[in-house]
Length: 368
Image (cartoon, rainbow, N blue to C red; front, side, top):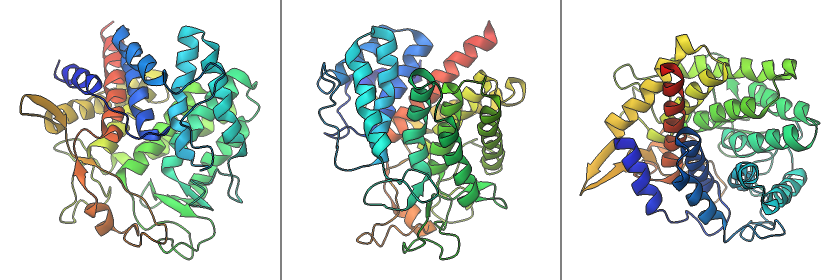
């Protein structure tokens, strides 16, 4: 009950992360949805409905959507709209899905075909962005567009593997600059210099969520995503801490002083593994226990009681690359370890709720 008590306490006191339609709130919304899926407790649906009420108008307009920014992050918050439409049948949610899709259709792209990360980050692919947009895009294509753009979605994942994946390490770098002009980018490869845990977490979640929303009947393309997921899963598990079962902020540099076992990325990996086992993309017999173990370790090591309240600790506050007026964001090991470590941040709690909901669902399946 420790985790449920924390989640209830967190949602009751939740304040929107930002005033505009943002990916952090999107993580919490998807976490609440996953808890609803697992428990069928209407309090989670009520939380979702109350959050969305001020922002989604009857004509589908999302009042606080930053329409001039072309930030791929904006798409993440709209993922919840599919669930809300399916549950309520309220047409405003269907219209809001189209409202979002119009911006995704117009979103600028790199030369290779991938969505750029943001208007202020032209020619750049970040692993973060794969999670923000691709599951929404896939669900839209499956439900409303006769699977017409499956190849586009799969190609964007293939480009990540082509440009950002390091075969020797078994990991993907945080980001790639197609122009190879950014101060953080390798002038030959265009990649950022290190492997950041949360970015790999975003990527693993993107892959498993796309599989979830994809028609398995389109087998060749489904198998491509599944194969990438299995490769990324194999890669990340090499770096798991043997004692705690968690993962380091700079994934492959546990030797560096100040590196730490980070909560949000570990939760994302747990979510991806457990969900992949439920979907049949990974073997339950081989891998379910390892995913569930991570969730249990997060509760044991990172959920702390202080002053009569529970807190989820050890969350990297934020990390990014550039732009030019932020030279400290250079992708170095030192940079990733310099960012604040906080508690109860939406980027950690949202994925934890998602992982815990998956944990509850899989546990029930295994017991039945």
